[in-house]
Image (cartoon, rainbow, N blue to C red; front, side):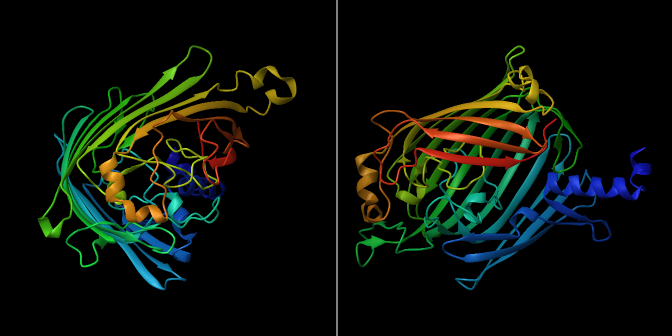
Length: 417
């Protein structure tokens, strides 16, 4: 029936539009390619100015045993090309043995997540958002190469191991410094980090259901929990790598159906870095200076406002699914959704790491929320015209910080059923 409907011009137009909005890619069947992501074509940041990016990925079908994707980007202010390329290959269907790797050389906003996986082409919207609150100048030049191996020995239990090598330096040294104390440097200070890391990743998603058997499967439910444990070992000496350290991180996400009162989504993250590392390798509390609602970030924090080597954070978001608005006669037909959220983070930064990153403190305050838990809360309305959500965000404390933002508005587009 779906194949028949696709022959109807009007339905085909709607189908293609929803497909592009949902995936971000335009399908070119005769080339077996998807062009995109359309959301990344145009961007802007303080280092590159206006920016364009064109990308593509192979797509022969839903069950492709391999996939290659890449992009090229150009900044009109720095007049430099950037690129990224990655590939993943399914070596064994039964145990889901996948090898992946790639390289990316680009300008990135790194301070937008605490516990992240090693997606070599992963790029935050904060890196090239057309509109931001305040200056988006704390950007990093990154050259990242990665090679990973993943296996699923038990259903919904994945084990990954891999290595990355990256060089990090400031994209705008006058506004944002990544300098650190280096006795081996002629001046006693270095501005570039060279780092080789070995990672082990465990991900358990009980209750998750998927369709397909290719290298990339699709989820068909969203009521499962996710437990992630990640161990990173930084090794000095390999390819002139600079630092020897260990980092242990854990996150637990869980949706809760609260009777007839809607759905609560919760995430807890904890982590600690053992050893001395500079600002570029520390855990930055994820701020959000864009106008987009992004779960897991703090929309009233600037990028790099808080920096830690030990942290614990919690995010709570409850969707009442229209239970309150449905009782108001003139709002009932609009099917609006009420959303409330609370988020907080506590962290520390050791004296040794503060001293090591001392030269960077000239542009970036090395401050952690150790005196008291930093928290925010928000109220929002979802399902506006079926596709839009708006959130009103309030900062709970640390209002004495320079340029602190006590209030902000964010929004997002998306289809939810």
